[in-house]
Length: 264
Image (cartoon, rainbow, N blue to C red):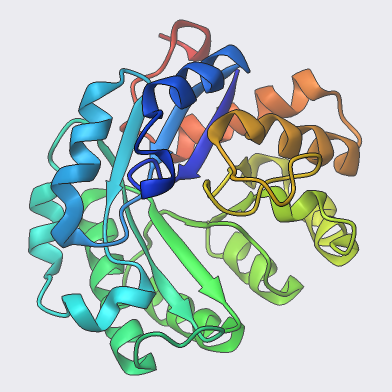
């Protein structure tokens, strides 16, 4: 079994065929999907999707692009919303200096609020990091010094140093379809050196469809293509990469109900 640890099933791209997309994922061997929150104020729509499908769970949080819109969201509110049994993660939150859609101080402020919620709940923080490696490292080191918290560097496309520091601080590294792109040789070299017990796979659907679907709308079923390339990259079988990444997923997303083959 594979898991898509990060998708956006609430996005308009999927509105007309959500049930069919979930069915295709299950047919492709993807037994769990986590649909990720980008605005707390739209959380009810996320939760409705997670409640509709047994195999779909969700997070609660504010994307850095939307940080300035939701500075009123407190750690306490995130903790309260995360009590729902379908909520298995906090985020996505973090720093995006590529698009800079929110002021950087607002992004950092929101990020630290989400870290506090992850620390209080014990749920993994889904971290978005783009073109912000130095500040991301500084915040992760500072906040870990206040108390450890579980986290995942989602859709990893940053430099080697951030991967190394993330692992050093107890985090996980999730690979998306970017891993399959022809020009991602450097990312594949980084992936080779991530400890196997810290690797995850995801789609970030509807974005970043892996080869051979590149340029199309992405969907959770395609996580199998990323997993295949990750297996080739680190030199294991496809069955083994499924075992590794799914085991890691259930360890990190500890609130997620396990399937019988994951220990009941």
